[in-house]
Amino acid sequence: MSRTGARLDAKKVNSELFTLTYGALVTQLLKDYENVEDVNKQLERMGYNMGIRLIEDFLARTGSGRCYDFRDTAEKIQSGFKIFLGITPTITNWSPAGDAFSLCFETNPLTEFVELPDHCLNLKYCNILTGVLRGACEMVQMEVASWFLQDQLKNDSVTEIRVKFVKRLEDAIPAGED
Amino acid sequence: MTVHNLYIFSRNCTLLYYAEWNRLNKSGMTKEEEAKLMYGMLFSIKSFINKISPLDPKDGFLHYKTSKYTLNYLETPSGLKFVLNTDNSAQNVRGLLQQLYSQIYVEYVIKNPLCQLNEPIQSELFKNKLDELVKSSPYF
Amino acid sequence: MTSITISAVRPRTSILDKSLSKGKSEVSLSCYALLFSELVQYCQNRVYTVPELQNKLAEMGAEVGHRMTDLLVMREKSGKREVKLLSVLLFIKSTVWKSLFGREADKLEHANDDDRTYYIIEKEALVNKFVSVPKDKGSLNCASFTAGIVEAILSDCGFPAKVTAHWHKGTTYMVKFDHAVITRDKQLEDR
Image (cartoon, rainbow over all chains, first blue to last red; front, side, top):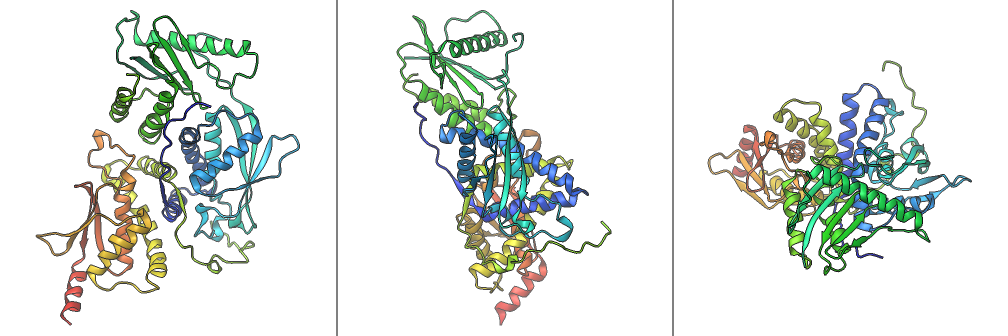
C-alpha cells in the first residue's frame, strides 16, 4: 500500500447550520420555481455539482482505489455518508444480479426540522443526495441511477434510496487515437 | 536530488497545470505539443502494461527510469494524472505525489468553487502552495 | 395550485412529538462548503449586481436566522429571551456564534461616533473560508448570509436592526439598530 501522506484533519461544522442552510435553499427554490418537479430537478443538478468535487475529497482522505465490484462500491458509498454527513445508512435489498441495492436511513441531517406542507407532497426534499451519488460515481467511471423508494417525510418508517448500476464508463482517449 | 517538472492532466486529457523547476534541457516543442505527446505516451504505456501484466495490475504503472531521470506517475481513481520528473536519486516520490493531490489539489482546486474542474488551473493560491510543497520536499 | 388538497398523508407521529436535538451532531466542513457554494452560485445566476447578490444571500440567511432564534431560546435560554440591548448582542456574539460556528465571534465593539451602531468582528468567517473573490466583484462578501442570520435573530428578539457584512479586520458585521430600540433601552436603564 502506498503512503497517503499526512491525513487531513477532518474539519466539522454544526449539523443544524447545515440543516437550516439546506432548508433555506429548498425554500428559495420553491419560491423561484412554479413546478415542484423543477425543484426536484434543480436539487439533483446541485447535488451532481457537489458530487464531482466531494469524490476527490473522499479519495484523498481514504486513499482508496477503484472498486472491485458493486458491493465494494456500496460499502464505499456508505463510508462516504459517514465521513461527510456523520450517518451510516444500512445497505440492504440487493438485487439477485448484484447490480442494485438500497441505502436505508434512520436519521438524516437534511431533514432534521422538516415537515412537508400539503402542497409539497411531490417534493423530493432530499433529492440532492441522488445528484451527489450520480456525480461522485461518474468521476470514478461508473454510471449509476438512484431514486427514492421510501421517504420518512412522507410517513414511511425509513428513508430508502435505491442505487442501480447502469454501465462502466471508458477512460478518455487522447485526441487522434482510438 | 532534484525535481525537474510536473504535469497534471484531467480525466479528459486536458493539461490542467504545468510547472518546472530545474529543467535544463528543453524539448524544443511548444508546451501544448509536449503535453499531448506525454499524455499519449502514458496512455500507451498504461494500456500495454495492463495487457501483459500476469495478474490484475491494481495500481498499474508507477514510474519508469532512464539513465538520467525518473518519471513518477500517480493516477487517482477519478482519473486525474500527476506526472513528476525527478533525478534518479529521489526515492519514494509517490508519497509526494499523494500529498500534491490531497493537500494541494483537493484543498485549493476542488474546494474553490471558482475553479472549474476541467480547465487549466489559474489560481495563484494553488500555484504558490504547490511550489512551496515541492521546494520543501527532501527531493528538491 | 387552486385545487384543495385533502391531506391523505400525515405523519402519525408529528415532528413536535420528537424531542429537540441537542445540537451536538456534526457534518464535514467540505460538505457544508460545497452546499454553500451551490447556494451562492444559484443566487448569482438569478441576479445582475453584487448588492443584489448580497441581498439575496441575506434573505436566505434570514430563513436560517428565524429558525435559530426559536431553537436557541428554547434550548439554551429555557424559553426566556434577552430584553437589554447589550445582553442581546452578547447572546449573538457567544451563544449564537458558538452553536452555528463552534466558537464565539472574536470581538464586539461599539462605534465611537454613533450610539446606534455596533460591530461584530470575526477574523476568519466560515462562509468565506474557501471563497476567493474575483477582482471584478471586489466588494462581494458572502458573509452577507451570516449578516442575514444575525438580522433575523435580532428582529425576532424585538431589536430591529440593519446588519451588513464588510471586509474589515477579516469580516466585520455592522449592526445598526432602529432609533426606537435605542430609546427604549435608555428608558430601561433609567428605571
